[in-house]
Length: 239
Image 1 (cartoon, rainbow, N blue to C red):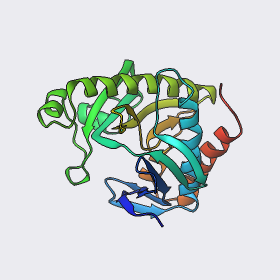
Image 2 (cartoon, rainbow, N blue to C red):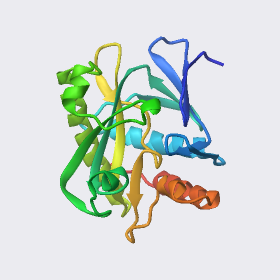
Image 3 (tube, rainbow, N blue to C red):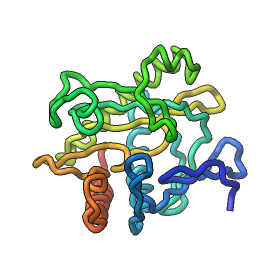
Image 4 (cartoon, one colour):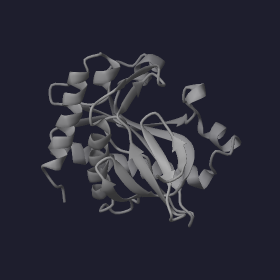
């Protein structure tokens, strides 16, 4: 087995023989509340790996979007470009749900006039706090050019993903995007795009994402949701 670089709540990164390539292993673990709520789900790693593979392959065809994805040698593994990950999570919201409702008293389901960007410092011990641009620059988590770039890329990706899910008659409520810098200094989308990292609602407003796990303990129901999203996009190709 390759040397382990990093292990998170849902994935493990390994070094490979290529200094510019990492192996990403998707785990069957599912967590919520900074890992306070934890369980395992049969085949979750394979489901999320395949979902993210399909979406990254789609995004790589879109103008102006670059991703870390290279290939998927196993059902629960991906080869990805080795990046310096920027410690900033970019959340783009079409509709109010989750933490923003508690933070500002916004009604769940409120539609924003334009996609709303929020930035969070990626640190589990600090519970990923909301941060302002000037804090990011002062702490030198990235520079002003990089910050502008990840915001622009996140909006572009989010617009494409909104269209993508509309194709399946699903509403993209919000999504988290993470970015990294390759050895040539290029900024690109990293991590994953799965029901772990976005909120999806069907036409009746029912959740088809990790909120099902956040709000309940029925793992059969959670598994049904992830399998549904997997099967939905596996059966179709979007040009």
